[in-house]
Length: 200
Image (tube, helix red, strand yellow):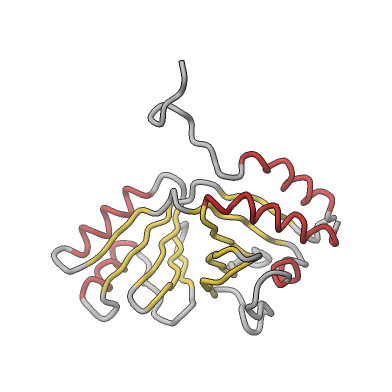
């Protein structure tokens, strides 16, 4: 009997290239590490940053939404990315989507707020290692030097002609998250593997 959408196990967009990502990591002698972080919860939130809902949502999540453009705020396992003056992306551990949605809606009460689960829309690539900046610079127009795009920064940009959300992680040597639409994930993984060949 064929699996249907309700009984089939979850399959990440990059499950077919996981071995190639691991092999590139092994052969780069620590210069580059590539891995997928599949199934992260991703919740798009839109609300008035100066209204009462913003403060209430921040208290409910134990994390204040970042108000400075292209910045990231992290508390525990939850990360908030600034996408616009009234738009954020919350990234949390796999399986936390419903809890995050209900906490936000309950905190906002009757205030106008848009809460959309976009977890299935994107997957996340982790790019770390001493040459991570160099690798990403091959296909990204942003200045990725730590002075310009240091830890705690994010941006909607293109990488290898693919629209992504790029996040400079704030832990030591944590590298970057590259959030990419699932339909372009295979292409972008191939692009990264090809661009990484000079480091292996």
